[in-house]
Each structure stands twice: as C-alpha cells, then as structure tokens.
Length: 106
Image (cartoon, rainbow, N blue to C red):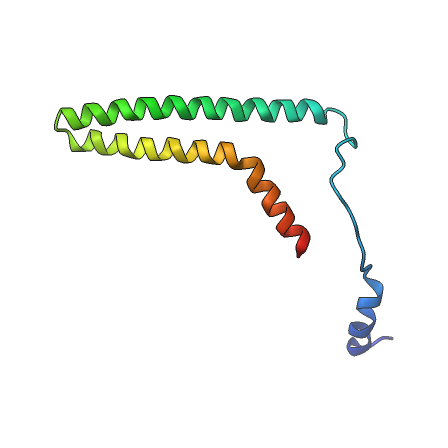
C-alpha cells in the first residue's frame, strides 16, 4: 500500500510532461463549410450593426429635435450598442487568436 506522501512524490512522474496538441483543420469533414458559414454570420452581424447605427442615429436626432430626452437617450444608447457590436464582430477572430496564444503560454 502506498501512503499519501509517496503518492505525491510519484504523481509528477506519472503525468506526461510534454503533450503537444494543436488544432487540426483537416480532421473533421465540413470544416471549410463551417468557416464559410462563420464568415457569413460575421458579415450579417456587421451589416446589422450598420443598420442599427443608422436607426439609432435617426432616433437620437428625432429625440433631440422634438425635445424628448427619453427618445434621445435611447438613440444614444443604440449608437453605443451598435458600435460595440460592430467592434466585437470585427475583432472576434483577433480576440480568439489572442486568448488562444495566451492559453498556449500557460
């Protein structure tokens, strides 16, 4: 029977130290179609962000010109949200690659 102290000493020897697994882009069928779908969804997200920005700017303008602070506030928030959505859609690949590289250094 092995006691706890000797088990803790033997544990690092049992765990493999050099595991090297990288993403395999040819391991599953349909990876290229999935990349095409993700690119199309990103394009749709960017187009909808532009549409939301235009609508929010119009709402902001109507609210400001009609002395309606609630409507103007909603328009301002819509402009900020649509710009944030566009930044996230546009920077999604860069963000994922950044955090992938950070995770590989841990």
